[in-house]
Length: 127
Image 1 (spheres, rainbow, N blue to C red):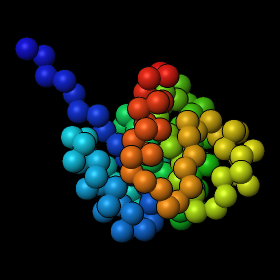
Image 2: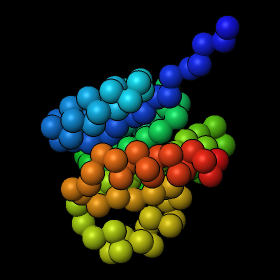
Image 3: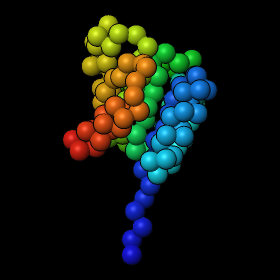
């Protein structure tokens, strides 16, 4: 019998409460959770671990979420990672940057976890 590999998610956010909350919720979904507190750590962990999903705040220290998305989505090795950006700002304000960075989705904070899961599942089906 072949054991199915757990999906992995990398959460990149400077807010420890967000990291803890999302980690707990994703673990309840049976996922392997990886966290990072800034953009540099998030980018290096993404390259090292190649997670299935990345949930990344746009405004984080060292490398912002748009830049991380751009670095990963324009790299053949990582472009298929489902990358969802989180923002406290109006997503319409950043729509040009969002389109240029090729992230899969953008979600405004605060959000319901179920909405985030829907975005992940819709992107998984599209892949």
